[in-house]
Length: 112
Length: 113
Figure 1: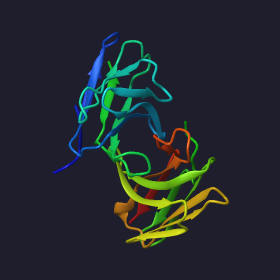
Figure 2: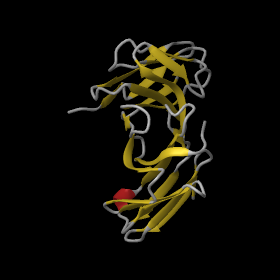
Figure 3: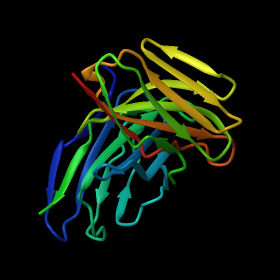
């Protein structure tokens, strides 16, 4: 079955710690995205990538980093510089512009 | 950046009633898309309507697009309790940076049995 997989589903981070959220897709999509969603809010774009080895900052990139070394993988690292990381993180992919996006099931990150 | 705005922010109806949600946007678009999100889950694509289309149907869903008013509506007919979710609109802008979807803030729909 083709799809997009995020792991883990729940993640707990201690103050000052970096954590990495995984996003893998087997849909052969070129474009991948990371969003942050806070309770009762819409989606805010963190980073996106249109092609392997290339990515661009979204609207709220500070405190986050990404890599795109393989077409199917787009991991997101939440660094200690992100002061308020507790949120629901969503990864998405699509073939390219003007097409539908497919979403993973999300990772809920909590700072403890 | 969030350019879409859905209204109402929240909607509560009885099972069997129709639900209508609206979305407004600011720039010229190639298409407008509607997505659904169940609580604590990822988003699921519902329907895509292109800028040269005025209406599109998919099962119990009907989407209209008025590019002159920069607005769209999503109608869910004969609603069911299972339709309870948040609904988001998203647009692909014309030209410039159309590589990312621009999202609205969503409408939370509650369908009461």
